[in-house]
Amino acid sequence: MAQGFQQLKDHRLKRNSRFLQLAESLTPELQQTTIRPRTIVRLHKDDRHPHGWFAEDIATPDSLDTQRLNTGDEVILDLGTHCVGYLHLSCEVMGSPQDAPVHLQFIFGEITAEVAEDFADYSGWLSSSWLQQEHRYIDVLPENIQLARRYCCRYVKIRVVATSQKFGIRLSDIAFTCVSSAQTLPALTRFSDPLLQKIDDISVLTLKNCMQSVFEDGPKRDRRLWLGDLRLQALVNYQTFQQDSLVRRCLYLFAGVTREDGMVAANLFMQPEVIADDTYLLDYSLFFVATLADYFAHSGDRETVEDLWPTAWRQIELALERLDADDLLQDSEQWWAFIDWHEQLNKQAPAQGVFIYCLQKALILAKAVAPASVAVIAQLQRRLKDASMQHLWQPEMGFFASGKDKQISWASQVWMILAGVGDESFQLALLNRLSSDAPAIALQTPYMMHHYVEALIRCRQHAGAEQVIKAYWGEMVNRGADTFWEVFNAEDPTLSPYGSHLINSYCHAWSCTPAWLLRQK
Ligand code: RAM
Image 1 (cartoon, rainbow, N blue to C red):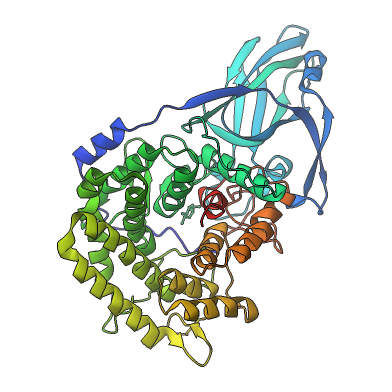
Image 2: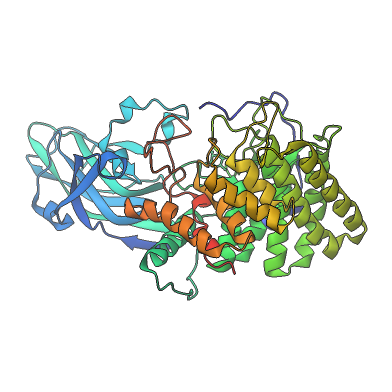
C-alpha cells in the first residue's frame, strides 16, 4: 500500500527563532531506570500465538554466567516488558586466548516475530534500516559493551556470528537502561474490571515509552513528532502524567518551522536540527488548532494561545483555499489528508468532518484571544455543515458519501458525527446504522478506532464505548500486548500498511487513548 510519502520538489521552510528557542527551553530531562532481563526464551512457531510465535521460558539469565558460547550460538533474552533505551553487557573469553575478533549480532524485537523471523526476507516498502539490529566486532576482550543506539524492545537476540575454533565467550551483567521523559505517574482512578485496568495500564505504558524529548509517534519507528499522534497523546497526558510543558514544547516546535506559506507540517524531525518533513496533510495541519484548544482547555495558558493563534488561524485559511464552489473540500489522487491507513479509503467526507470539528476548536480559541473572528468562524462552520448535508448526505442510504464514486465508509460517518453535523437524534441513528448496516470500508487502525469510540461517547453511548474498547484493545491484551500496536485487525494479525508486520510499530502513540476515553463522562 504505497500511498504515502511523496517528495516535494520545492520545499521551502519558514523558521521562527523565538518559537524554536522557547521550545528548546522546554526540552524535558530523560528519566533513567536500569533493568535486568527476566528470562532466556526459546521461540516456537505456533499460529495460535500473536504474530505466529510462542516464547517459552527456558532458563534464567544467571545461567549465562557459566555458559561458553561459540560460533553459531544464540541467546534470546526477555526483558519482561516493553522497554526503550540502551543495552549494555560484559563479554569475556572462555577457552584459549582470543586469537580472532569476536563478531556479535544484536537483534531487538518489540514482539517475538522480530527476533524469530529473518530480516533478510523483509519485503515492506519502508526502509529496512528500521529493522532493529547491530553488528559489533570486538578486537580485545574483556569488554564492557555499550550499544550507543537507542532500541525499543521486549526481546533481545544475541548471536555469536564468529569467535574462532579455539575460544568461546561468556556474557554477563546484561542490563537495559530505559529512558522516558515521563515523570512519576500521579495516582490514577482504578477500574474494578480487571480487563479495563489492564487496558489502562498498557495505555499508560504506551504513552510513557513514546514520551522522549518530544511525543514520538513510536519509539521504534518513526521516532518522530507527528501532529495527529500528538493531539491524542496530549489528551491522554492531561489525564495521566500531566506534563503540559511537553505539549507546549511540541506546539511551539510545529509553529517554529512551517512551510513558507505558513502550513504546519504533518511531522517534524528533531535532528540534526528541527526540520519540517515535506509531508503536508490537511487533517494533520488542522489538528494544530485542536491540539492548541485542548491545551488551553486543560492548562488555561492564555499567553501561549495568544502567541500561537496566528499559526492556528493560518491552517484554517489554507484549508479554506481547498473548498470548491459547493463548500466541499476538493478531493485529489495525492496524499492530501491522512484519516486512516486504508488503501481504498476516500478522504473527502472525513476530511470535511475534521475541518468542521477543528472550526469548533477554533471558535473556543477565538473567544479567548480573537473575539473579532468569532462570528466569521461560526458562519463558516454553518456553511460547511450545510454543504455536507446538502451534497454528501445520501438520504436513501442513510449515510454520508465521499468522493466522486460516492464511497460509504465508517470514517466518513464517524467524522461527520464528531463534527456535529445533524442533531443529536440524527447522529445517534447514524451511529446505530454503522453497526446494523456496516459499510465495507472499515476502520483499520487504533487511531480511527479511537475516533469511533469518541463518537460513541459524544452520543452518550458510554456502555457501547466501553464494549468496543474491551473488544478491540482488550483483544490486543489477550494476544499478549505489552504496549498497544500501531495497526490491529483481529482477523488479519499480520496486517501492515507498509507491506510487512516486522516494520509495524508495536508501541504506538495513537493507540494509547483508552486511558483518555475511559475517563470521559
Ligand atoms: C505513520 C506513523 C504516524 C502517523 C502517520 C500518518 O508513518 O505511524 O503515527 O501519524 O503515519
